[in-house]
Length: 342
Image 1: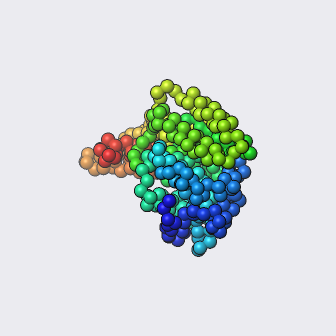
Image 2 (image 1 turned 90 degrees about the horizontal axis):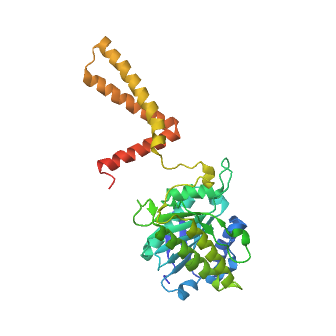
Image 3 (image 1 turned 60 degrees about the vertical axis):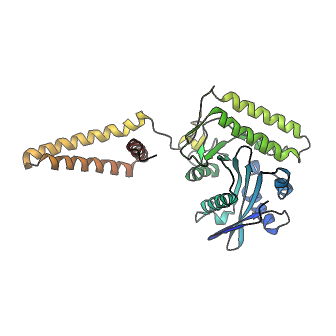
């Protein structure tokens, strides 16, 4: 195991290695305080595995972190690295309510990333589960907000069925459908996974992570593993044969209340482009009329038309989120066409 390393900024991150460390006790207290019961694992299991996991599973890493502000513990995080799958799992991030500001979430995430980079781990994907289904669209839940925050960090929603297995045998309500978010670690432009890649990630999460975690602490680990196998079979059966799993989208059945931005289709683009073109044509007609009256040359006329186009696009993108998304899609397409997006 690597020695305890501290990464500093206005906030401070520290990896914890002992259950008797007072900061571990305080960080776990914050985790238990701010995490909903249905998503909270037993703190006894956390205490059991700290300092033990890396010795038992050589090459893999279970990383407990405490997060500080002005030398006060204000947060807790847990991450797991599975070397066989080159997969980093962000299990928990918990920040005390009074410190969920000043970009604390992003600072914590960036410091974890810096620590992992220091370990020089061979990572292909980073994965995290977020409970964001079935919420009121008018009142975004913490899970919905976490989806948005995670997307800003490069995570993408896997558009496929995924269940979080139950957190042990004493918390049956914790088994639920959740959002699986995946961040390609090196090739960040990946917009899809093959069926085999997605199932490999799910299999590692289910059996190399969940089943492994509870094997030593449950009275009947075989029954737990059998239930996890049923969940895996459901996920596998839900996937179309040889069809890839899209990333960076949202299901229409509940994530973010169905109001999250999605990739624009050609039809959606035309809904914005057509009115814009109509305005440009009308403007060009007016300018043509001015040519007859004011005697403007065609170069000046073309410049005015282009200026009109620019004004229409800018104004539309300011007043309409949909138009703004469409403009961004057009700019990305132009950039890719010009070869500057390679």
